[in-house]
Image 1 (spheres, rainbow, N blue to C red):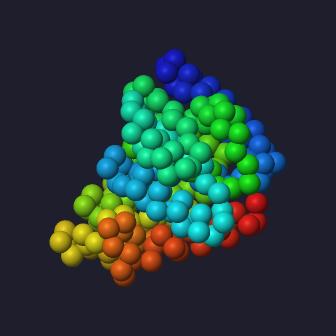
Image 2: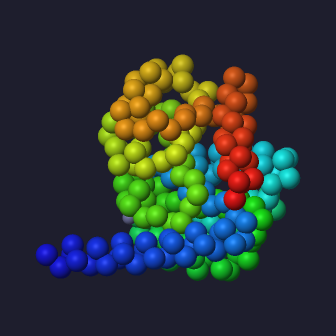
Image 3: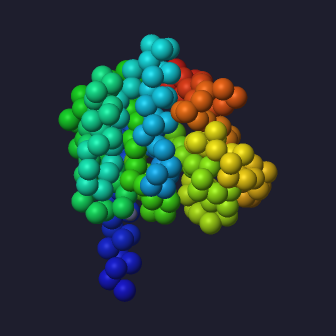
Length: 219
Ligand SMILES: [Zn+2]
């Protein structure tokens, strides 16, 4: 079964890169945050709102964007004045620690929060440690409340869950209790309700910023 052997080798090397990334981030006073989620979960819009919130608290943000082919998301971030870098995976469905290392070296970033927006995928990003200090999954309300039941390894892997597009909860019959029950079966990570359409009633972006600020101050 040569595939299995190759996969193990890749994972082994990934762990080495992840370790050295961790050392670099600590030296540069950087908190790295791995943002995962399905395509269309609203990762980039959430991330932009989060960067703005952190900026208001005098915390610098930079973004490494993992995308299959395009650079649309990176353009949005650089237009807003954030240091950003695109990784085109050219079909690869996740990013790994080595690719992040190369991107990070080009960014020349320090003293702030480095967001790594992973490729939209709920499976293999949970198998590749990037050396990050915080793992977040974004799940959008229209995706449904059964995601934690269907993607157990991913929901077990993360430190925080960000529900996006919460303004659609009523319109979609999204069952918060069912979602939370599925999550609690595998993880005690906090859930933050967000909406970039209306901040009214959804304080999640501020709460995530609180969590990140606390983590960043401790780096
Ligand atoms: Zn993959």
